[in-house]
Image 1 (tube, rainbow, N blue to C red):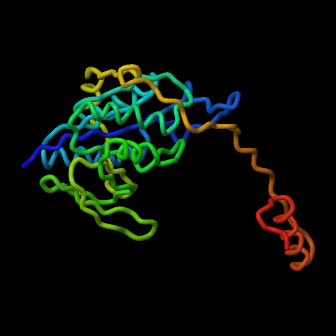
Image 2 (image 1 turned 135 degrees about the vertical axis):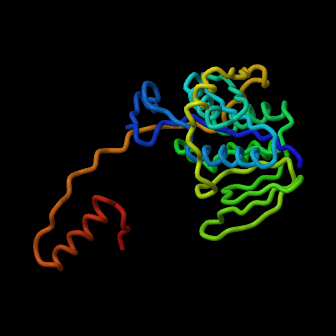
Amino acid sequence: MVAIDIAVLIKSVIATDEPIRVVQGKVDGHSIKRTINPYDEFALEEALRIKETHGGTVTVLSLGGDETVEALRTGLAMGADEAVWIRSEAEGLDEHAVSRLIAGAIESKAYDLVFAGHLSIDNGTGQVAIRVAELLGWPHAGAVIACSVEGRVVRVTRDAEGDSESWELPIPALLTAQQGLNEPRYPALAGIMKAKRKPLAELSVAALGGATAPRTERLACEEQPARPPGRKLSGTPAEQAAELLALLRGEAKVLGRK
């Protein structure tokens, strides 16, 4: 049996049950509940299962400011052996800049596999992990819903928009986890207590060569407008249908005009 050393990319995101506020064109992420990106939990759970079967280590890795610490400690509490924190308070780092820093951190270690969530629930671009794979020159598979390791080969089944595909990838490889891959475990109390005492390995952006200039720019960020009250249509069914059609075209603008 060959031990497998795995890195899992995790991200701290605003919890889905928290209200989103926009202040001066930016999402206000302070003083609210944060959590590990749910798709990253699938990735971490799969890494832990591979470790339990084949041996090896699991390292959680994240980039961000102080809000990142809680997510890393949750990863340790779930069973990760080590945590690497790329400490950065910089705003405006896009997927291009973030992926280069993460790839630099992974290159410094001899990992066999890298897992990540299929996408993050805040930006939802699904780019960072795939960009990391390209920068490393590793084979990768996205939206994985089944996974097994045999020797130096990883076999995966991936979601293909309603269908599925099966692939074999040589190790090292990068995989992104889709919902349905597994059911993530809850951290046990003993794991939570141990995680509080485990040190975090910090990496500075400067040590990784500095952040590259972003290649994208966010032009605006606005809160979703309040939902207008419902409207009751009167008249005959034909009159109601005509008025509804006019409203969908004129006010809602969800139908084109002939």
